[in-house]
Length: 151
Image (cartoon, rainbow, N blue to C red; front, side, top):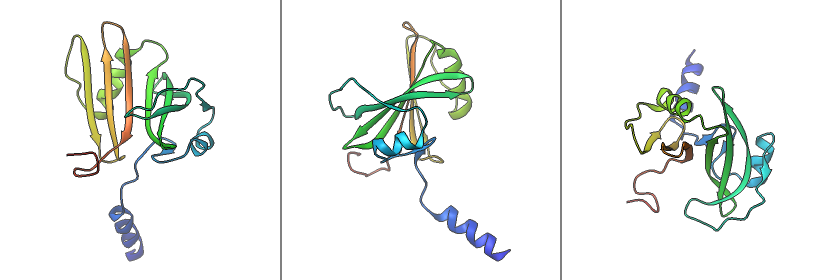
């Protein structure tokens, strides 16, 4: 019994593992392809931005919503996963995000809601442009205060 408690205490004391589903932040494109089925290289080059370069795309399904998944990399390391519903099912996505992360205020125009998910080590951003029926979810690694590039 003591060994079980000691093991649990050591696991809980370790650093949080930051990831999105079957990926880990910092993976190479080859590692992401190997980890997830059906992920393919993105054929349209994109200029390097502060959010990385889309190098891979694939499909993802959650709670009955089908998504196009874009995997963004900086210096060949995974930095972001962006999910966009394949159909304009933004109301279902908004409800799913509210159930998962908490209430989403706002009714008209543009909704941008963010969460710091300490359990998964992710920063989550939900964006919904209601006039155009466009919405997406953006996952990236949660940064700690005082880390490089922060305040």
